[in-house]
Image (cartoon, rainbow, N blue to C red; front, side, top):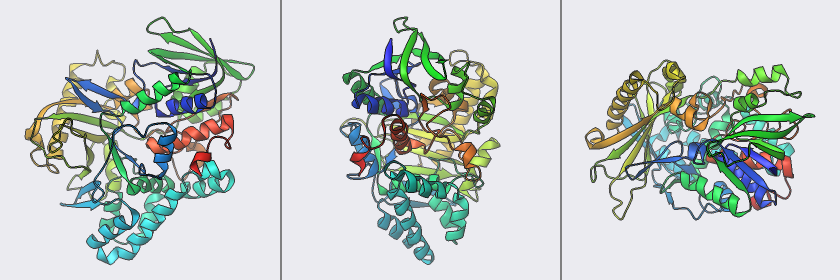
Length: 501
């Protein structure tokens, strides 16, 4: 079977690339080892309830904002989006107090200035900086030369050092960084561009999706097939075969036995991790050993331990925002990642699902997401979900109770309101999404070593490309930008990105 393009992996980046190419008239095929598409967009159902895995909220989806432009292109704006409370889309619990973050750059600055009046001038300047960075997110697509220069300039700066140089109050630094568990805060390495761009998008506007992230994946998959493409589920890629310096076909092992064993194409895009992609290239005249070693040695961001809670009916009032809860003995939120390295929990993200049915007053489901180093579950790596030992189950139960107790300090009465819960670890994410060590945000970008940690879509194999969160920015917006960067290397930029202008 021959296609113009084969896409390996049906995470957001893979589905978006397939959509872009199919819309451009290419005959495309998506190969996915799981029986459902989506990667970290996947939702799961237990006793009639839908729970999300890696998707919880997005930014910059308001009319005319950048993600709205991308999602309009992908025909995703008809999904049931719900905007979070503009007067407090995120609530930070730190040092015995709580702080609300508002949408809109001016409102964001004014709200924080009321709580930190002596820092009002610095807050205004910081908000203006985020606004400027956010306005340039499409520059690498629309202005390749100057755009890449401006982005790389900020990628080479340290985010924590920027905050220390521009904000005098240490408490304010904590609050400005407090809703950043949606990226991995590392004092030594986090690029300023990553920190600023992601925070900028959520200050513009913040949105949940009623019904779970799978709605995005299902919509994209349907659009791809409607445009004549194929989406093979339960079909695992086992090898990328190379001939004369180009990828020739991908070998597939199908659960159903109905899919082709070899799929030929002119172009291949991998939404899999770069490490797994190279493992599939078992023999290659283009991939030098030094390149393989470089990719294999790249550090991964931390993963998450997740507690998906079904609440007793009518017990916890629904608040249309997210909570970021930090341990009372934590001095700096930027230490959460290093504490996770040591197996200690100092922070969590609490996300409420949009309530089902007519009565929206009370929450039905709440997710707790806690940074966790893969080392805590590494000893069970050789097992599968069906064969995990009792020791692993006890570990999960113990951690879940610890984290529910911690969340109760931010949402009083939560512990008593739990009807049942389900848990997952970085090991779970690794099994179902293929993410190395269950990483939440892909390869750890290092502002001190960009050439080693920042990957381009092009690989040494001329017709093999990469996409997804490991390349540019992670998250829904970052992956959307990266998908167009990948496809523009294949189709050219001019015809692709005119809708962004």
